[in-house]
Amino acid sequence: MNCIILGAGLSSLSLAYFLQDNKKADKIIILEKEDKTGGLCRTFTKEGIEYDVGPHIIFSKDEEILDFMNGILGDNIEKHRRSNKIIHKRALVQYPFENDLSKLDDFDKEYCVNSFINNPYENYEAQNMLQFFLKTFGEGITNLYLRPYNEKIWKFDPVFMDTQMVDRIPKPPKEDILKSAKGHTVDGYLHQLYFTYPKHGGTEALIKAISSKLNNKIEIHTNAEVLSIEKKSDKFFINTSKGEFSGDKIISSIPLNLLSKIYKHTPKEILEASKQLKYNSIAICILNVKKDYAKDNYAFMCADKNVIFHRVSKLDFMGGNYTKENSTTYMAEITYRKNDLNDLASDDELISKVVRGLKTIGFIDKDNDVNFSDIRRFEYAYVIYDLNHRKNTDIIKNYFDKEGIYPNGRFGTFEYLNMDKIIRQSKTLAKSLSLN
Ligand SMILES: Cc1cc2nc3c(=O)[nH]c(=O)nc-3n(C[C@H](O)[C@H](O)[C@H](O)COP(=O)(O)OP(=O)(O)OC[C@H]3O[C@@H](n4cnc5c(N)ncnc54)[C@H](O)[C@@H]3O)c2cc1C
Image 1 (cartoon, rainbow, N blue to C red):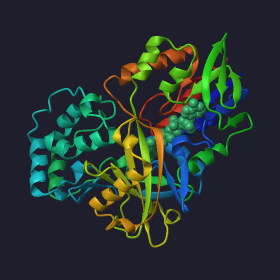
Image 2: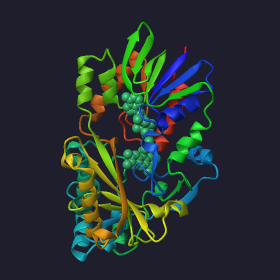
Image 3: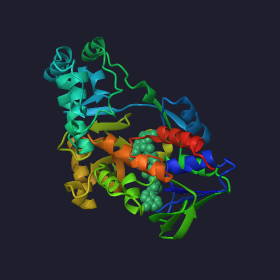
Image 4: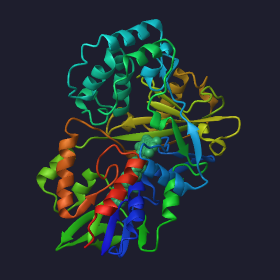
């Protein structure tokens, strides 16, 4: 039996890895539109500096998958302790915000503590993301940080987003909030307090490590964009920019909305649901600058709407192979959607807005402090959990499951999945796929 996997990101390569020993799979063909594999886990280079599609780190609550990722990287792994800050009116507040309230000025601190303790929203059932923030953290923490930051990264009002992403966030105990306001900073989100990262090669090292373990049953075709899929009897015929392929089973990691569009038999209601799926694109801007004002920190979250990026990270944090002498390299991330102002802005305009943003937060003094820059855009970056997301994705996925096309991966299933969840999903799918 021939299995065809659409897309060659982490989900597809890890699926091939877990599927390769299945005796019923005679051949596994992977079709990728780009000239190399890796998808969102690719790493690029500018003037010797390697950078990812947004700073990727390896962490997980899933011990088995964490061991798999670290294990397959072998010696090429280094452990780091998180040092992330939220820039709030020029103060550096340790992430997560609610755990370091003493860094706020007295007015903001009192607003956060008082509205947390006297919270009129706490007994409501949250119907959307904003209501969840108000109920869980109170008005101060919501209005000063959570609301503006989420509006900035999602480019979507949290009133129109559901609670799927946030409903597992625990409500902080009252004592912790009071302690945090008095200066006892508490570490939050402990599963990401320590993380690992390849010593060299960026996140793509993980892709290369998995690929090196694939056997000769697996055929990878790059520059093979999937253009259409047709089912005749029980066989699939896939037309690509590199010719036609056929197979008995399809596993798809290409975006679910795109799959609906290129599958020749998709019914109208599935096409309608697909059109409603919402997602964000991302521009990654690299700036190598003369001075280091970020010190021993890695990522800085910025909710200020006058600054174009929502996060800026200091790449040097990851160790010697990611540094360039006498300079510091930052990665700024900007989200956008088709035809919004960031999408319509030229690359040069975005870079000059990033430079302005770095000046606003005090990371550079003047324009000519920038040694060099780079920018890349990626269309599919973040799934938006809008109020109709669950209903729409479930209808579409059920339809394709019945057709014998199995969605897998971040945009393949249209879920906010990090690398660990992707590998877990592939492992589970490899086990459950019936290859009769
Ligand atoms: C900014 C950002 C930061 C992140 N940070 C982290 C992090 O710190 N830690 C973490 O664990 N995870 C992180 N992630 C998530 C991680 O990148 C993803 O979970 C993972 O890369 C998804 O892999 P995938 O294979 O599902 O999807 P993708 O990597 O998107 O792979 C899909 C593939 O399909 C290909 N494709 C699309 N259309 C076609 C077509 N028509 N024909 C053929 N091929 C096609 C694409 O080119 C791509 O290679 C981050 C993601 C982003 C966007």
